[in-house]
Image (cartoon, rainbow, N blue to C red; front, top):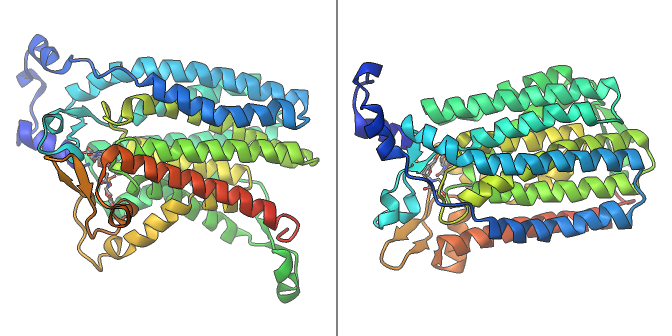
Length: 422
Ligand code: UD1
Ligand code: MG
């Protein structure tokens, strides 16, 4: 992470022994300044927007078994508690990370007074810890589980926890990006090793005459695919970043779409195993959404905290395991359409064909406060080149709306392809 490097380079060139550290009172005076309060109004509006269709589907539209509904509601209650704990803990953790010089400067405010403020980094660590506590405790209340599922559920939590650790390691140690790219494949191992679910894919109906099969068992190739999915989801969130609120915002939009997709699948299916798979996805996505909303209240423009690679990796891995355990990774990839696009635009720079600066961000004009697109291959720059100069906040809103459109398109596509495809 560049910011920490810069930060430590500014303070001292050599590691300081503990005895030489500044006196505690002086240190606290410089870091105790509280961060701006959470923007709870934004969160309330967002929550209403996404939760109304969700609760309508859960309570009114579909006849969902009492047992599953009860587990979903208990999980929602725990997630709500997780939201408030995360909101409370972020300012506390911010003081601690600042004390350890884990901060960044807001690049898109460079040249203005806001650009000189030390913004605490890696606050994804709070989200990750609260998420894990909620997800672990929830097992006690899940009345529909069979033990096979719990093995995979715990393996999924182990993968998420491992990813959180490696993300934090990246934030603190600033590993080279080629290593960074590989970290998620290690973190995915617990789930890949414990996965006992099917390794088959359903051949789309129109292709059946050509393939000669309607179900194809991929065996170990399926596990390889799961590993690659984890690598893609984590890195694609991490490189679609650099604007206040974008990292968390995209996660919130995708998680909401996952939630609605799951409830639709549970409501429309009569197969109990299929329902279980989607219920388990819900038990992981609700806490992810709740804790991410809490982080968003501090990270939305103007950011008073940064999320760090700790968060981008954690969120990407959580969504990947949710897609794997719920058996809807192809739908997940359509929800990730903007990230796929960003990844394709990034390829020449990531592959080293075109020079790649440390942060591939737009140019900020401190006079007007507007961003101009550069030639760096990112969706952020592509949007700016198409739409003209924009403020950071408007650009982020455009990108999040685009994300929501991609998710909506996925639902429309599924609706039209249902019956034809499977
Ligand atoms: C970086 C780049 C990405 C590039 C990738 C290749 C960013 C954010 N990420 O990710 O474009 O393709 O390497 O491996 O540019 N920041 C802001 N405003 C924000 C969010 C972040 O100014 O809203 C800045 C802060 O200085 C913060 C830093 O970005 O400290 C975080 O960067 P980091 O997440 O460490 O970058 P990478 O993940 O390495
Ligand atoms: Mg990052």
